[in-house]
Length: 412
Image (cartoon, rainbow, N blue to C red; front, side):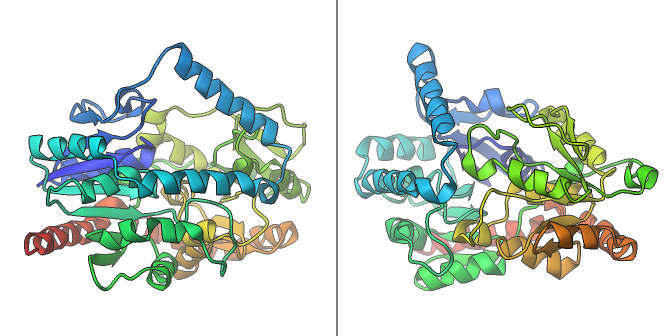
């Protein structure tokens, strides 16, 4: 089957998914919707040439000026707490609404030509709304081809807390309801979509997760550091660009945990952090070390992996979504810990498989992670279930769903 993989992020998750489709016999073409980055420059897929750059890649002085301006704005806004800069999210939301309400005839023709030229049988996209402009154009371009969205993050904007109405849902309502296939990462995500949108009149829905492939998982395990010093050690594997992105600046949470006598290990941040006897910095790993399992093997020396974001309210985005840092933590086959009440989908997975725990505060984290019997049970659980939580093991469900969607579309 000829599959067009529509992406903008060119993430490790994209590479894992694309390689799985290829190995399963799909003829995959990657459509890069990024206007400033070439997928070939970011991708770690060896020998992958079937890449179509939809837009002209902009380079040179003006492109660099634009990037540097964005970075300066982020650094300027960093002192503001998340809730105080929500007006920026709302402004971006309004701009995106205007873009999506108008029909881009030029884009529709470009995409129609691509679909015909490569004889595409199904379009597949994942993560969030980042390619909605292109999806809307495909829906209106006149070429009958099914579109499937694997929804791992939604809503995209971090404005309202759980229970509040999202303008975003109204902006994307027509696009979402016209999708031929919707894959929801958890029951929490599906329940949200089922409440906010009419899923019955058009399209099929599936609840499943495209986990990382087996090669990302750990191989040989390292000796736990806690066995040497009798103190708990956790690792944080999220981005450490603490100077720019407010939601990712978890330095405050890290120091709070370290103050309780828990060793916290993080990748090298882009700021000079205050020295602390329980804070440790490790060099950043390259992409191939992540793909071949070396980074996951490095993580096996820690007692747990912490999933953190700089939020102090229950936002729908984080409650519904399963972030990449959570999915990758499974590859290391160590328990996963996270603050309670903010990450509904992640807690659903943790509680289902008993592969970690949530905590109300750093004191409870210290109490639970110091309980050897409890942590032994968590470690045993994740070691048993992790080999099953791979895309290889889940792919038959995805494959059957895609074929069912294609078959249904052919009847229209």
